[in-house]
Length: 272
Ligand SMILES: [Zn+2]
Image (cartoon, rainbow, N blue to C red; front, side):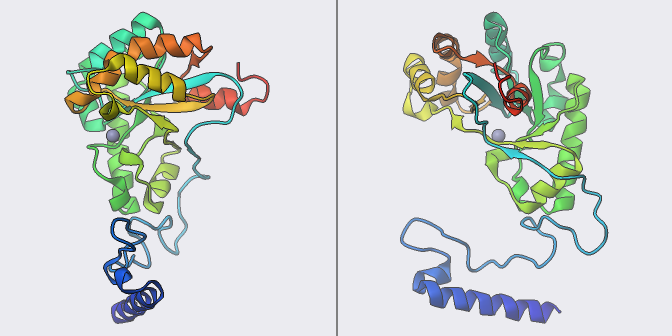
């Protein structure tokens, strides 16, 4: 069987190489863009790409929804922060949101939630929490069992730290394979990506400029990605948060959690 798989894989590689020309033998088309990886075949069953576990009955739940944002005419925006909690910036972000009465959604890293539970305990009323994996490893490189174990461990740590069981999952870097879908379905999660993200690197030392850019780019139903953890350059977005909030409110926007955004958008005419 293994030999058969190897031959099948080699034939496929050769056929693709013939179709795409010499560059494809290296998995590269042109000089900079990788179209697909020709020299690494995927396993026939299991592995990170497969969304199925084999021939036996799968206890996988009904299905999983993947959202980037929502279609709505209502000026609603969901502000999200990934990678926390960490002592450096998370309290500052929570203070700013509390001062301006803005709800947000925090996609927490389970291992950090366990270590820094005191940072978020009793501070998340009005906010929402989601799962952002146990240790920010790449879920898209894991098979379904491993991804499930990672997310289950994180789920339990976040639940213990915050008192709330997350219902949303955002995979690190937005990396998503079939195995992640399978694990998310087993945990009855919704998968949440984003429609717009902070662009801190384009506005060094200019929080007001960065805030203006984001305010201009938001559209109704936007899920906006930010971070309350990371390199110093990300501070420009956090320092501009008050400007961003007031600018979006001046445009008529209301801040909602991700689940609130999805709920309101699902009811025609009730998005406001
Ligand atoms: Zn992340």
